[in-house]
Image (cartoon, rainbow, N blue to C red):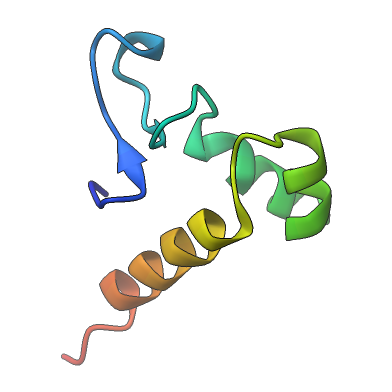
Length: 69
């Protein structure tokens, strides 16, 4: 997924999708959520990512997944 909230650049973390303006991989958020952590706990651990960025990422993912057939 390549949105305004996600940056993919070979010079940043080897092209791993990260939250734009940070070096925090999107996968880290997914790992937190899978482990039962919540958004606030993720943001506490990665203060360079904002709640707005997390919500925007989730909204974009929702749009991609819930596309009417």
